[in-house]
Image (tube, rainbow, N blue to C red; front, side, top):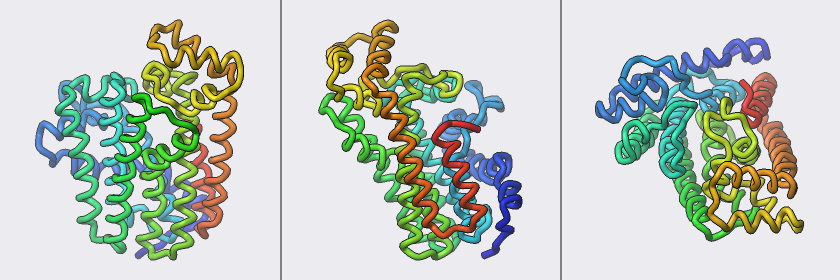
Length: 345
C-alpha cells in the first residue's frame, strides 16, 4: 500500500474537514441511494442530504468524527485515506444507525436542530432505516477487498454487538434498576467507546500492526469515549441547544442517570438529599428540571464530571502515545481528541 508525507504540514492539508467529507460522503451517498427507495429517502433525510420533501438539502451530515479519526490513524501507520475509505464510510453509517435508534428510544424530537427521522416518517420506518444502515455498513466492510478484511469485519461486528449491549443496559438502568459510576462506565465503554476504538484500530489491522499497538489504540478509544460521553452529559444539562441540536435537560426529564447526576445523587449533603427526593418523583416542568439541575451543580456533580472527563482525556492521550504512530499523526489525533470531547470545530 502507498505511504504519504508524514510531516505535520502535509497531514493537516490532507485531513482538513473538507478532505474528510470529500473522501467519505460520496461513498455514503452512493451506497445509501441504492437502498430500497423508502429506506433510502429516510436515511438520506437523516444524513442531511435531502429535506422532508425529498429536495436537496444544505443541512449538515455531522462532523464525520469517526471517519476523521480513522483517516488520521491510517496516516499514523503509513496508509492514505483512500486505503480506509470504505470502512470509514461504513463506520459513519453504523454510527448514524445508532442515532436514529437513540432518538426513538429517547423520544428526542430533534436531531442536529431538525425534526428527527421518526418524527417525519414514523417510528416503524425509522427503526427499519436504522437497521438498514447497520446492515449496509457491515456489508461494505465484508465486501471491501483491502488487507485485513476478515479481522476488520470481526472488529466491526464486535463493535456493533457492544453498542447494542450498551444501549440495552442503559435502557434497563433508566427504567429503574439503579446504577453507580462503575455501571455507567461499563455502559459507555460499550455504547460510545466501541465505535471509537473501531475507528482507531481498523487502520492498524489493515497495516498488519502487532497486538501491543492494537491494545494502545483500543485504550485510547475507550478513554476517549468516556471523556466525550461524560462531558456530553454535562452539556445535556447546561449546554447550548444551538451547539447540541437538542433541548437541554433531556436526561433529567427522562431520569436517565448521567454522570453528573450519578455523582450528585451519591453526595452526602442536603442538596444531594433534596435531589434524591426530586429524582424519584415524576415532575417534568421547566421549573422542576431547573431545580434538579441546580441541585446537581450544588452537590458537586458538574465539577466532578468535568474533572473525570479531563482525566479520561489525559488517559486517552497517554495510550495514544504508546501506539508508535508517525509523529504528525499523533499531533493530529491529539487535536482531534480535544475537539471531540469539547465539541469544537
